[in-house]
Amino acid sequence: MTPKKLFIQGITTSGKPFRPSDWAERLCGVMASFRPPGDTGDPRFTYSPYVRPVLIAQVKCVVVDTRLGELDPRALDFVMSFAKDNSLPIEEACEFQPKTQT
Image (cartoon, rainbow, N blue to C red; front, side, top):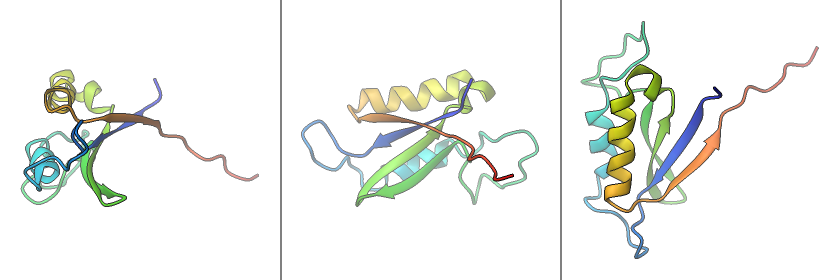
């Protein structure tokens, strides 16, 4: 299965920024302990590589790597339920590896 990136956008269905303003950092902080095997990052100080806050066109978003579901399906369900319960749009993108020139 090709890993995908899901972008949870911090804009409500009424077009207003989702509140509180630090929602993305809070959500990513809750998910910080979900890390790939061998990851030595400290969840007290760094976000999980699977769930990261980003700013896209001045809109707070959270990028979710679908490999989170392989690590713990409940964790991915939690993040997706958060977005759905708060009526936040979710956009999907595929990750690809560029071919190397030979």
